[in-house]
Amino acid sequence: MRNTIQTFGLSLFIVLAFIVIGVGFMFGLDNPVPWIMIAVLIAIPFLHKRITARKYIAWDDKLSVGIAIIDDDHKKLISLINNLQTAVLYPTGETYERQALKEVVDYTVYHFKREEELMEKFAYPDFEAHKKTHHEMILKVSEFMDAYEKSRDDTINELTLFLKTWLIKHIAGTDQQYSTFLIQKGAK
Image 1 (tube, helix red, strand yellow):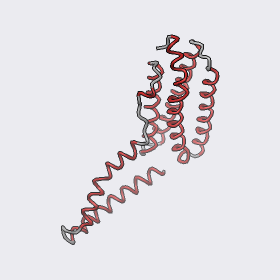
Image 2: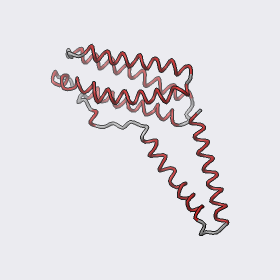
Image 3: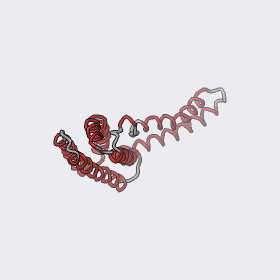
Image 4: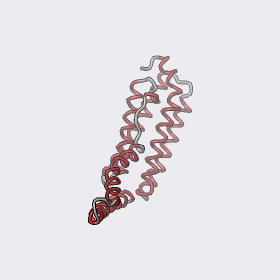
């Protein structure tokens, strides 16, 4: 609902800007108001791109754990979270939003299982603690999902922010801790 109101507000502003430009030029080409409005209209797409770009996650090689299958999973999770972000930012419809959310949750569970199997295979000493962080994240997401079912519009932005923040902190922090150990043990 919020995104629909924002889209409507932007559309209304653009229509009003064209009216101001038309009326402004009726008072002469030297009138600064229509020229200012033209500059504002030209700037809108650039500003929109800069503002929305901040809402997406970009893969950075600093996030690499050096294990190809895990890095590929992380890249896929980033892509899925970015799809969810698109569903949140643009009026794609509830079906697309729910599907994007389901894909993020399902792939996260799959990734955690795969990561835990790798840690078990190579007897990672801090396995239980790492597994606990995965479990806590799934519980938190479950709480968000329950809240989402009760109030979609109130929850989806907070859920998306949580997923983005948690994933980056987890990859850049906790996952980096097992990286050297597993690589030394032969994980590739």
